[in-house]
Image (cartoon, rainbow, N blue to C red; front, side, top):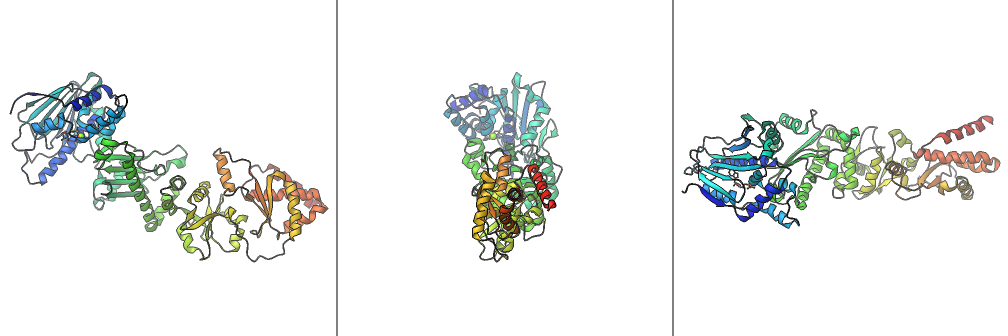
Length: 612
Ligand code: ADP
Ligand code: MG
């Protein structure tokens, strides 16, 4: 075997190195991640060798990674006791472009117009070993292969055209990469700086990483372990660590899959929904890993927006080949991950709602807004999300909640629609005049107390092929009600007069078949619009136009009959009464914003009553 040999880098490698040296200015710290990940790979391969029955050099030496900084000399070194490399492997691995990440990186760059590397690319591709040249004046690699008869080797390069390989005597199994930092990059020779970087990217590597003699990776990557072997306390500790949260999480999903992608996922539902505090929007707390090495913190696009409250880890072995290193931009792969994880999470919630309803209830109360947001914005998962919605109901005690599925089970055979009513409280809902026909027919009404509930229902449209119907919009009429109605002729007279009296504010006066105890209600003249929706849109500063209402009157009601009678006798009184009738109806719909006028009028009415 020859002694020192000078080798020229393969043309593509030199091209890659030129970009790395001259064009990449941000994310430089990731060179540490890359070198540590190579060291961890080498340790992993050693572990595998040990089980293969082959003879291994220094079998007693445990796989381990040591990082050392020297701020006087301005160096950082990463040493592992992995499988090492032979001279041939050195040439092959660190001088040619056989491996995937670098190749894809170059391809991407060559497709760019200006041939200038986008600085963020390196972080995504992880061009691996060569990233050291972002910060290095010179890189030296000492290595000794696991082959019993191999010899120590030393590889040296400044990244400009060529590298040297010479024999190194007496080297232990494994590899040491020494990076001599450029003047401007000396920060990476600071122990504290490097500690932060290791904690960020390499905290979960399964081999001990020592930094200047002290173990730096303290938490184990429990997500890759079999969940039957993990104790509750370990999960809790792990969550405290990644979620920076002392409160126990409300939910946890740990799963592994092999197809269509190899995934290990551990997700947590935090105890508190910070958006409920009104201080801004949650940001996804789910980090994307590839074999325990951080690829992207708070990964975007891993979940639909409405799952932004989750904390945890997604680890996919398919990433280096497919997504991160080769084509992070290849959104179809991220979409695949997104799809798998999102449906698993939905399934988890549904299972939980059946197996541990109380726990599900806690999650629902804290995060219901997100689920409704999902129903409204995420067409793909709308149907599944619909199964998770919960409401109070006229069939249940106050405070109890039902699913749509259970409502459907309670439905009579001939009932076609699921009825819901928005109201600010249970009491208002129960007394709502809109519900009179349903009560009369003994039909169940779901009570919606969150203004967004109604929007979600509108988007959901139907459940198990039953149409979802806002009670306000329903055309159900009362069955067998007692009392003589005002004659049709008189109703027509009264309606005409009411229209004249109330003017533009009402579009039409209708005879209602759905009232029992109330003299009148208002219904928005626009189909599919309800009073609540109008209020909601207004609060979002959306232009809805001036609302026009239909006033529906109950011809059996005494107030209506008397109003008809008093019209001729005392027109001024009748006018005040008509105004009040309209306002009462608007009030029942929650549409009266300024009660002052109404109070004044009530006093006028009081005076008249008391004067009699
Ligand atoms: P990748 O890790 O994506 O293959 P790198 O540029 O990081 O690309 O590394 C190139 C190759 O060099 C590796 O595949 C491996 O074969 C070899 N290598 C790098 N570092 C080490 C190491 N510490 N021990 C053993 N082999 C290594
Ligand atoms: Mg690598």
